[in-house]
Image (cartoon, rainbow, N blue to C red; front, side, top):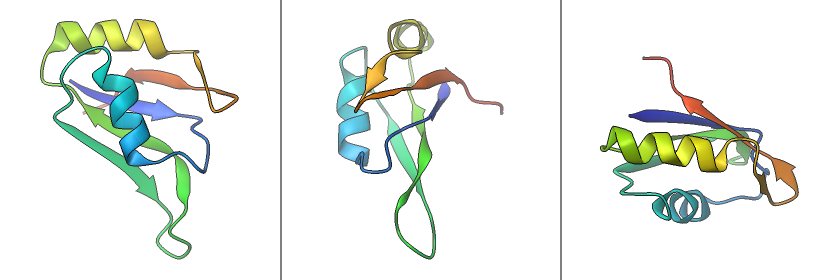
Length: 79
């Protein structure tokens, strides 16, 4: 299941996001979206979790949780 993670801190790294989600299951792919001109985070990422049950647990656990003093939002990404 592909997840959309929004309202991320501009300083968070792809590794930190992967670590956050790995606590809830296997992460197949993690893609932090960066601004092409500045190379800085745009504040959102996509995380791919192959097991839908684990992805659902991650959504429930992480949606509206505080990471780097910001309340992140996690939901299933639109296909």
